[in-house]
Image 1 (tube, one colour):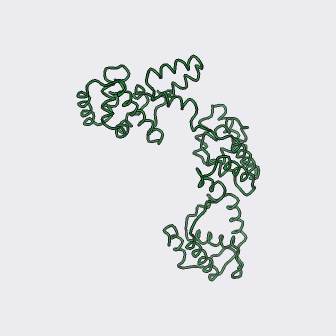
Image 2 (cartoon, helix red, strand yellow):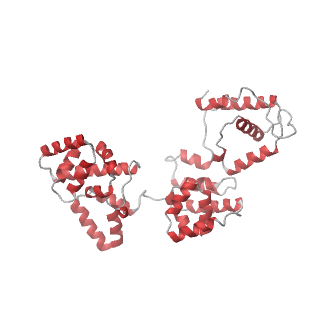
Length: 360
């Protein structure tokens, strides 16, 4: 029996009749929905924890309604239902994701974006599909515009449907006045009926699905900043001067997005420094540190790195730096870029968090 099916086998011993209410159902007349209710009722009686809340709301409602309609079943019927349930589990060869969204997630990379969007639009119009399941799975940057641009009542409904942690995260990203208005609107949602909430979710989902797909994962500021991060210093300064002449606001945002070797002391948390040195090969580390010595800005960054790693490693690096001799400018930039790339990699994987300029 598969390992994840083992807990179900434990329901077999000591099969008592499950009392649901006065009266009894005759044997062998249970529908599939009634059988599901029997299994759930029995597992709950045995103290099992079931993830019923993860089911779509219409399925939760149907299950509760069915359980409310049932009365008593005898022990023989319970035995038959449990045996049939276990038999079906043991016969399972493949499990398919439930719903269109699950299928699209499985087929990601094997189906065109236009086809995926069309299927999502079609599924969102079905009254049996809970649109909030998909909305709650979207990243914060897709949901924030709804709180910012839609009516506060709509934003209040969305906050009420989201898990508390995500709702708090989104609310914290709103301007103060907007956040207060949306939060107050939440207090007015007490009498909103479920069908209205579903329709609001369906309308929001249709709007989100109608947005054209983005060609790039990052915005223009992040892309230009990433390019300039690893560009030679002269090229970087030249480009920034040109950007400031064309669009000073855009240039200012790019400057904030740029992270170079000189920014390490201001933006890298000291305790994260050892993680960086583990990703960079020691010869490159020695080259970068040796090249930085005696140069304003760069030397401060090198000393910051050496001060925040083990004394033994720092001493070994200093000895190698002393023996390194003069470093060519090209080799220096390549070595420093290797350190910057390591920092960016750790930031992308969320192993470290850089200090933002406004937090300095």
